[in-house]
Amino acid sequence: MSTEFKDAASCWKEILADHAGKRHLLKQIEKFARDNTDPTHIVFGTSGWRGETGTDFTFQNLRVVAAGIIEVLMAQDKEVMAAMGVKDFAEIAERGVIVGHDSRFLGREFSMEVIGMLQSAGIKTWYAGEATTPEFSAAVVMLNAACSINLTPSHNPANYSGFKFNPSDGGPAGQEITSKIEEAANSIMQSALKPASVSPKNVESIDLTDIYIKFLEQRATLDLKKIRDFVHNADCLICVDNVHGASRGRIERIIGTGSRIVYLRTDDDFLFGGVAPEPSEANMAGVMKVLENSSAKFRIGAIMDPDGDRIRHADHTIQIPMNYFGAMALHFLHTRKGINGMVSKSVGTSNFVNAIAKAHGLDIVETKVGFKNFRPYLLPTSEKKAIVAFEESDGMSAYNHTPEKDALFGLLCAIEMVADTGKNLGEYLSELMDKYGHYYTGRSGISVDRAFAGEPLLRKLEWIKEQYRVGSVVMIGDHERRVADAITVDGTKLVLDDGSWLMIRPSGTEPKVRFYIEARTEEAKEAMMQAAIKITNEALER
Image (tube, rainbow, N blue to C red):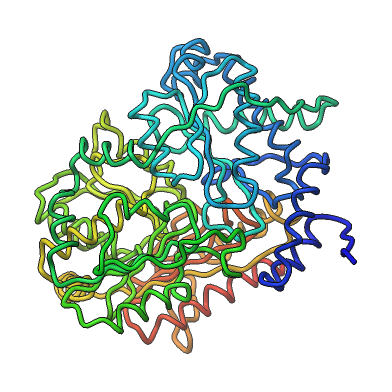
């Protein structure tokens, strides 16, 4: 007897509680996604619109967002057209839109819905199928497309779907575009209009991986020949965990296969084996086991999220989060490859890279969280060009590469780094820390009720900057620390008198409060984290 569920949320709850035994219930999720016509409020956060599949991310609501985008493009607002990098709607229709998805449930079906609507508006389309976010970014540029639509919620859990929109420069859409899309889509939501489903007349498929490889060769930030020679000739082992995501098959086509390369979790699994598919320390266990059991001289490990825009590195001795790897990449690209420029990082990122940049006389810019804030430093036309741009949440890009975060690039960069320095990643990191200083970072978060997210949450967190002004006391374990600086670029970042800091901000993609810390000793790290949790809870309880 089949179980009856009142809504998709309750169905997802049962599926996620027993991913192996309840995956057959995905058929009911699809029914909710098709039949549910309840409106939702569209918000493009730091990386697109996201929602629970069947609850707020439904076929009807997806059509509304697509209709909103078409409406905005046809309106030909001068600011929007300039941000899109096009003259008018006729140019958009001619240059076309790339549409695809990651490896999640209903990806193809959602894509066909969008393609049908774009075609009905006279817009040329390409279907990318399953592909990674950086491949979309590179393909927009290489094909001279007007924009791309990538149906992915990135690293969110299996019950989420998402919608990323990138204009013609390949980077994440800025506020000048997404605010108009939100306005148009929410207006349609509130009206009696219900955009009808339109079947595509012709689906033209393209191979984004082939295009991406050509992009890498043309931009030449990395030396693909050196990377391939190392992989196939050195005494090395490379282990990549794809976590059932769209990155599967991509690295094989770039560097190949063989006894020196191990790929984990490459099969189809819409539920990601029951884990949140993020490049976390816990999810890295499989990679670490492979590396530790090898006797190769050089051992490189990586885990990527479902849309291939986030990565965590490792060797057989240590896991290396982006806070450290981004700084390593700066040092490598600048000192060993001779790339000049500046550094761009999000405000919640470790100051390890600041120390390296200062020692080499390089400018550094700290931005709000969200990779779209790096656009001014990653375009070919940028006056200030970033040698590396990265954020603490595992995303990076680099000089003359895409303005999107790119896990594929991150892995290739690590391989070339080891090939060039003759050191494992942990050795290289230790050498840099001994020279530039030791920094100990951490991040976590607290979930809040979905109805509580947004403006009410922002108001709650405002209390922190009012309560903890410069000169006020913060208890870190048993020690009193004074606030030396309070930075409110994105949330509230309290810099303490010993150079350590904690930052608290609402998530732009999930109903969560996120907090980040950095201590100057390993022993102080846990106390810093507990202080961030305590301050966050105090703000939420008020």
